[in-house]
Image (cartoon, rainbow, N blue to C red; front, side):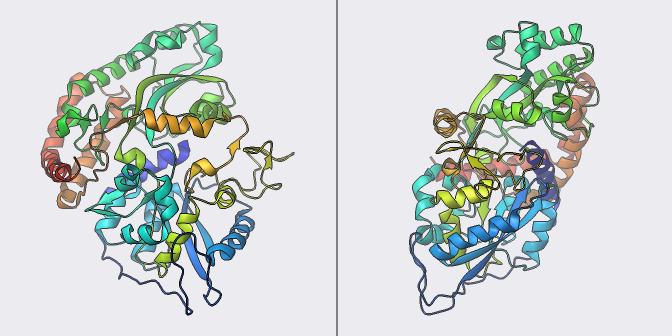
Amino acid sequence: MKTIYKSMLIAGATALLLTACEPANPQLSKTDGNATVSGGDSKPAVTEKTTDLNLVILYGGNEVKDLQLVQDEVNKLTKSTINVTIKMTLVSAGDFVQKTNLMLTGNEKVDLVVVSPFFGYTNQVARGQLQPLDKLLDQYGPDIKKVLDPAYLNASKINGSIYGVPGVKDFAAGFGIVMRKDLVDKYQIDTSKIKTLEDMGSALKMIKDNEPNVTPMIHGSIGINMFALYKWFDELGDGNGVLPGYDNNLKVVDLYETPEYAEKVKLMRDWYTSGYILKDIATTKEDHMELFKTGKAFSYLTPTKPGVGEQASKYSGLPVVIAEVAPPVITTASVTSFMWGIPRNSMAPDKAMQFLNLMYKDKDLVNLLDWGIEGKDYVKKSDNIIDFPPGITAASNPYALNMNYLFGNQYLGYIFNGNDPELWKKMEEFNKSAQKSKALGFNFDGTPVKTEIAAVNNVVNSYRAGLEAGVLDPAKKLSEFISKLKDAGIDKIIAEKQKQLDEWAKTNK
C-alpha cells in the first residue's frame, strides 16, 4: 500500500502537467442478440452474446503468477450471472498515468479503469475520456447505491455528474506516528501523551541521545512531503489553495502563508538540526520500510485507520505502537482516492456497470479478486479469516496482487490472519466518527489556470520537500518560496478555486 501511495502522489503531480487531448468519440453499448439485461440483479437472456470487458487495474508491479487462473475463475462466475467475461490488465503505479493516458486517448478498448485525483481524474473528465455514470447507476447499479452513502457516491461529481465510483473502504484518514515498540518499552515512552506532532520531540531526543545507530524519524514514503502524511487542512484537490481546519468558512488560502505552516516548518528545522530527522530525507530513494525493519529507524509518519498498526508490523516484522496526532477527517480526496470509471472507449458501458455492481454484492467475486483461489492462494481459518496455505509466504504468494481495497465492497472481503477479526466493523465506526470537511464533494477543475498550475508546481517542487523535512531553513527560504509562488501565479489559482467553491456551495448547502 505504501509503494502505491508514494507512486500515486508522484503520478498525481505528473498528471497536472499532461497536455490536454481530444476526447474520444462517445460510444453506445453494443449488445448482440434480441434481449438485453436490465437491472443489477438480472440474469442474462439465453439469446444474448457474451460480452468481453477489459479492466485496467492499478497494482504494485510485482509478479502475479496466478492472474490467468483467477481470471478464469472470475469468468465462470460472471458468465453465469451477467453473461460477461473479463480481461484483467495490470498497470504498475509508476506507469499508470502515462499508460492509461495513452489507452484513453488512443481509443484502446477499456471498459473499466481505476481513476483517482492522484492520476488526473478531473483532467480525464475535462478531456471527455470518461462517461457520466448517473443513468447507468440508476439502471444497472442498485447494489452500489444500496451500500454507498450518497455523500460518498456524490463526492466524485464534476459539473453535476458522477464519473467515478469509490469502493466501500476507509473514507476517512487520520494521521499518526509509527514507533518501534521495543524502543518505546526500553525507554518507557508514554505514547498516550503524544497528542500532537510537537509532543513527539522528547521521544525523538531520547532516541537520539541513547541509540547512536538509530535515526529517530524517517520519511513515511519515498518522494512524499512530510505534510502529505500529516495534515490539518483540506487540499481541495491540488493543494494550491487549501481550507485550514477543513472549514475556514469555505475561504481558500495559500497554505504556505499560514501561521500554522510557518510553525510546522520551523519545528521540522529544529528537529533536523538536532539530528532527529534522517539527513537525506528530502532526496533519499531508500524505502522507509527497509530502513525500519532493519532496525535503523525509530519512527515515521503515516495516515491512520483501523488495522494500520497490524499492517506496519506485518510489513516490517517488528511490533509497533502508533500515536495519533490528528483525528480522522473525510475529504473529497480521501473518498475518491481510488475509484472505477467507465471510459468513453467502452463499447459496453451497461455491461461494465453490471460487472461493477457485482463487486458490491457478490462475496465470491470480491474474494476471488482480492485473494485468489481458495486452497491454492489462501486457506480459510474460520468463516471470515484466511491465511497462506502451508509452504506459502508473502514472498512466494502466487496471487500477490495486494489491491483488495480496489474491488468494490471491501467489507465483503475476508480478513487476513493477524488482523483484527472485527476490522470491518471498526472501519465502519471509524468512518462514522470522522469529521467531514465542509468542502466534501468539491472537485476543482484546474483547466482555466493550467499554465499557472504548471508554473506553481515547479516552484513547489523546488522548495516544499526541503522545507517540510527541515533541510531548508525557513527563516531564509520560506519568504523566498512564497514570493516565487506569487510570481508563478498562485493567487490566480486561488481566486479561480474560490470562485468554483463558491458556485459549488450554492447548490451543496
